[in-house]
View 1: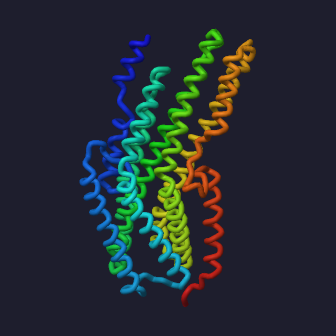
View 2: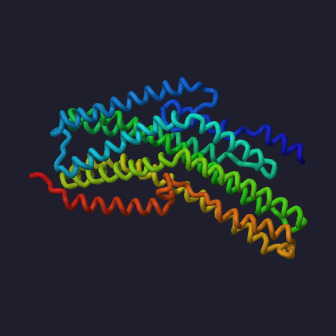
View 3: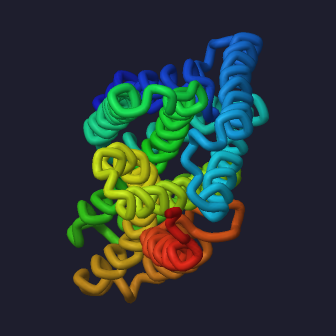
Length: 382
């Protein structure tokens, strides 16, 4: 039995190997901390410099377009002009950080992958791991990035080409590339958190496999091992928060600014009865809301699965007779209970707020309130 388990540990691909496709894509697109392990730092820096240049060119054209073609931009009121400027400013600040993030924390990704590999080896000594859902999620993330952003760009170009060709600006076209960078960077975070969610699931299934036919010493030893595995995942949560804290904060601010500005522009389009423009703009805000909502949902799933561990372990003890009379089992349960209270799978944005479904609901409410205020100040031109 031990030999079979050892063979499984050696033959199973590591999580770093499984995540190679999205790692290479994120690395080549110049965002995030994900990178090939054996790639020299000089190449990574060169790629980031290229993308910083692209981002700078986009920002420069955005400023030139704003001052040179103010009338063409159809800024109907100062309110919309303010929202547009705020939106683009936050977007470019976030874009610059996404590119520089991987240089500032160049060694974090290999360290994270090593910790995940060590954790997986410990889990596989106890039970098997199914990584198929992770592979499927990775494929969906890559397809979404390379499908949604080009389609939005094509729709944008076709609309203005057939209506007002002079409205096609280089800054707008490059903005879709920045959107693709933001998407792939957030998808890397989603996949990493989803890996932790799957590991929490595996631990909970391992607890469910414990049988009351086991002796008290065996159960106490099993619980101690599960405590170690759970603590290992909690350490990974802390590390992920350290890596992605500022990234999550900027992403939240960027999502809020883009969605408010886009929905306000859609309202202006409704007053002007420009329904084709409304259809084009809908893709942009839906992408950002989906991006932010997916992060909140994945983080919520991971925390809920972590909290289920205590429920499952107490349920097992209650269903097994005479276990509560054994001092060893009782001590392990008490220590595990304290551990679960101290270590919670909460993904934080620089400790300002937790990424969860409650935050997503709150963001929807704040966006609605801001739109109502902006609409009150908006006065259509004659």
